[in-house]
Amino acid sequence: PLIVSLMKNITKTMTIKMQETRQIWLCSEMTTVDLLDDHKKIVMAIMEQDEEKAQSLMHKHISVVEDNVTAYYGELNMK
Image (cartoon, rainbow, N blue to C red; front, top):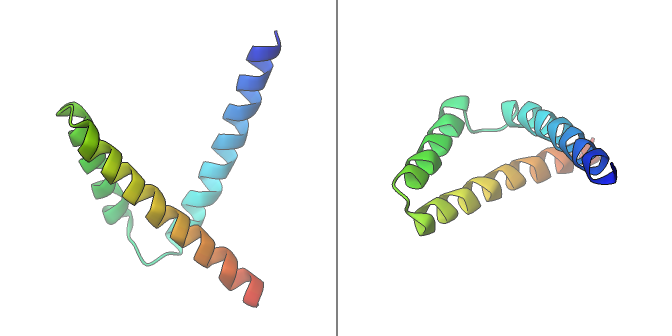
């Protein structure tokens, strides 16, 4: 079915992009300890059912990741 094919393609694309982002992350100033700490805080907020806190932490995390990816590609373009 079409929907299954679409979902598989989306999943494949997301997996590839997440792997690329993780590789970029390794070149960033933040450590894997920082990354793990971010994830723990998000999970704790979800477990506490604090939607506002979880959402805020997730937005912050995504923003930091986006900044790192943008900086990485900016540095590549300067070379």
